Amino acid sequence: MKLLLGVVFLMLTCRFAAGAETCVPLRFVPTYGGKPVVLEQYYQLHGGDSVMFETFKCYISDITFYKAGKQVLKEKNSYHLLNAENEETMSLFIHMDDSIHYDEVQFNMGIDSATSTSGALGGDLDPAKGMFWTWQSGYINCKIEGRSNLCKTRHNEFQLHLGGYAVPDNSLQEVRLTIPEGAEVDIVIPLDKFLSRVDIAKQNAIMSPGQDAVVVARKLASVFEVKK
Amino acid sequence: MRKTVVISILCSAIALLSFTVKKQLLFTIPEGWPKPVYDFKKNPLTEQKIEIGRRLFYDPILSRDSTTSCNSCHLQYTAFTHVDHRLSHGIDNRIGTRNSPALVNLAWSKLFMWDGAVNHLDVQALAPIANHDEMDESLEHVIKKLQATSTYPALFYEAFGDSVITGEVVLKSISQFMLTLVSANAKYDKVKRGEDTFSVKEAKGYALFQKNCASCHAEPLFTNMQFENNGLPLDDSLKDIGRMKITRNAADSLKFKVPTLRNIEFSQPYMHDGRFKNLSQVLNHYIMGVSHSSTLNPRLQKGVYLSGNEKTELVAFLLTLTDKEFLYNTKFSYSKK
Picture 1 (cartoon, each protein chain N blue to C red):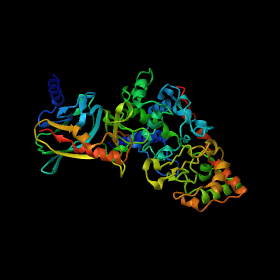
Picture 2: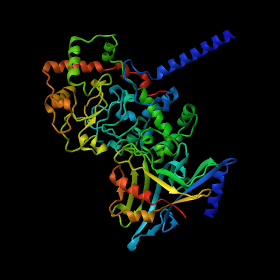
Picture 3: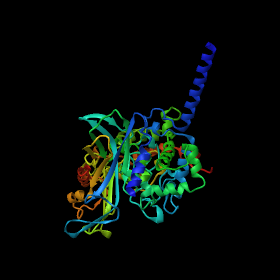
Picture 4: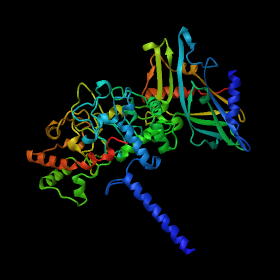
């Protein structure tokens, strides 16, 4: 049923891609054990420990397509906030001329420094989206929150607010992936793989810019892959 | 044919002129001042938008329990700061960790707050709104509350063409009002424009100011907009390291944003933690209280020497920075509309 709704939704959003225009859907799917993550559901970790995700929000910006290493399309005003709580936000639709051929997509996980210092912006960049730090300016590029018995914190909570735009603590990450042409592209984010690279027993409260945020952001970006 | 051309040129000239006049009423760069840092093209001033910002500034709806407004800590008659409290207090009588800064000539500022934590005027208001000790509220919730009022949606519709209130338009409106808070009509300014003259005492004080203070408190804004360590010994209870908290760079330890001296007569107490309650204490600090450390401002490393008379003269000059037209300008006061 959910799949059917998804398909209907895709058709609705892409229906204006008429004539010589085409629409490439990029769907972002956080997964665990190869299946889409269900928020607030517990998953098994190695050795009998468990983990649950309450929040997955992430900025995807500056989407660019390539063919044989050459840039063929750069989306204008390319700022998108993925929010796993709201299925609609997890799929991005890139409109392009159907004469364009591509074999790779590149995007930033996060918001660049020029945009981070441009004052109050609208749409997905609106500070009211809760992804802009109030006490020290700058976007939270990715926010992952949840619980795990590994975290000796209040209610076993972990909060990874990965942000920071200024050198040397710029946590923005570039992701480049090979993609098939002419099809819906599923970009999976295996959170089990991510957690195998991060020690959440120790790194469970990152809420300011710094090297911790940079390192964890790099690890998150490293697990993005195209579903085969 | 020629007649039509002449008339149309004339018309456009008049249109241009009236446009310029209107713009000048909303914001003008005082003669001899640098270009503002704020990019007005991204948020062009209009009377309606300024008016919304002014209402929001005085409206406690921005706080969790509707008790605290921006004006609670930034009172016009005292140079838009909080007098008589070393550390400003906010909601539920909670006391913060710093002395609220005077709000003036903000269009020329690149970084905000004592430690420069805020990188743009538009996003400055987020800090006091969200701070636990100040307004303890979230922008998301403020928007919901504003949307539910009988007044704001119509005002936003009039100003922005949409009655749906967003974080962007709330913050931009507050910026608009903040940008109009320009103080450039003190006696000092009138002397500079040739409309007035300094007394002998003030003139001597001006010379002392230029020799001892101007490297940080640079004219005409009376701040170099930099972060400096002015030799205040660390307060053991606050342990405030200033700019270093943001940059995590040891070279920024104990550095704070250089505040403007405009309207200093009314902005006591002084310093980021309000430790000095009058100008005499401030001058005594520079003469004999400076604590030496590796990040101390180079000018202060040389020491400041002032006699009793010179102190009086310097204070006489500082009082020429009082701008009564600014402090009592009804355009900046609570809107009775």
